[in-house]
Length: 294
Image (tube, rainbow, N blue to C red; front, side, top):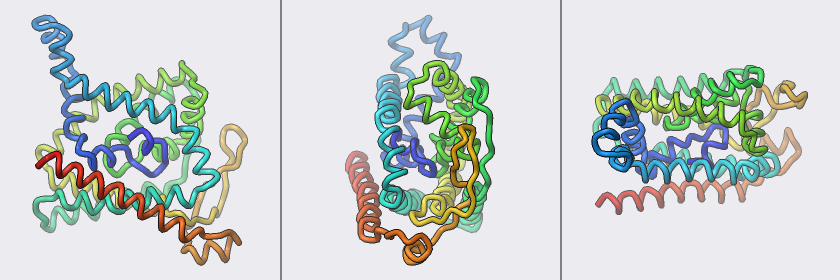
């Protein structure tokens, strides 16, 4: 989840759903409320920790944080030096994830299919929005943490991509790579507030409207595939807060158009291999999940 959350356009919530940990994750987070105070008074801290499935939450969030801090520099470097193989891998991963999620739907009807279409349209609309430029401040880090964490646990929406739209992705990644304690603390506090609030909403929707919610989330995943298409041409650039030129508007190209326009290799063979690796990873996780549940 941590590795996925670092990449704009890829959702950690998707990884959580594929691996089967999304429901227990939401359930554990949802139990973190004022009732814990009563449990602590009556039964002690250990009982409260077990009530929220503490060992599981520690493992998940510990893994996420470890992955973010250890992989942030590597993924940043790979996205700059080898973008086509990286995007191809995540394209295959998300493409097969859509198939996996559709298998979880119990029944299809007109309303549920409409929710799927709405999800696709909503995600596509988000991907064509132009990024804004928020000022780097402690308050903005707090709000970005609250917003991004909601996207991070929501299958189909990338927390990193939301940060990119807000113009805060480079600042957050720089804080993670530079281990800026104050900024990271503001982001973390915002994330905790957002997580405790949004987990109740998402958990309730999955309980009461399982198939409709699942189809909407699957639509979100399908709609974001255009964002992570490996072959792109930058149409216009913008200057970020550091004075660096970064892509503003990009156009998707076919591999052959990419070679003609840019004069660079499309890396077709390695792209296909990476795409198949992404598909195989989801297929493998699906098989493991099925065996664990049987």
